[in-house]
Amino acid sequence: MITRRDSLVAGVAILITAAALALAQTPVKPVMHASVFNWAGFKAEPTKTGSRRECFDERTATLDRLECHVTTVNPGEAPHAAHQHPEEEVIIVKEGVLEAMQNGRTNLVETGGIIFQASNEPHGLRNPGPHQAVYYVFKIYPHDLAKAKAE
Image 1 (cartoon, rainbow, N blue to C red):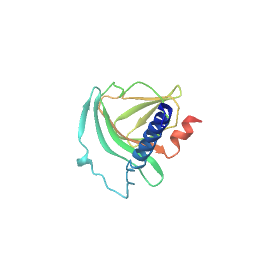
Image 2: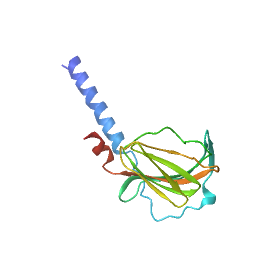
Image 3: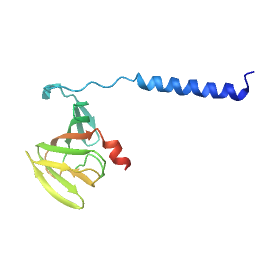
Image 4: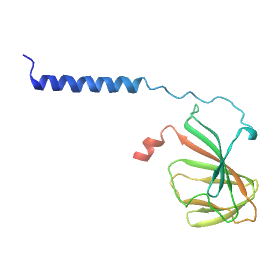
């Protein structure tokens, strides 16, 4: 005779099996191959302090995610408050001047300059100049980032 306990165990087993099958069937995002991204293809979306252009956010052969966007910041503004995060960033100043605050120290970075934001280190940006500052942001998420963060 089938007991209430037997029914409960069978129901839980069915739910676990269904969840495992659903996870196994979740499609993996394809790897980005060699590509070209032209400025004209980046649509500017207004923000409170300027604008943002999304370029790409893809998986690569060696990274879980490689994300790039272009930020435009109006004079005297900061795109957001100083912060920190596990992913690393490389920032290339396209136009204007930025103040880069890193670990309590501030440096001026002019057109053509490069900023590296290390994992989990406090950082922030501000446009101290009289004109808009425009910069590319490359966010780097390695495959083991979630694992490294948990350790």
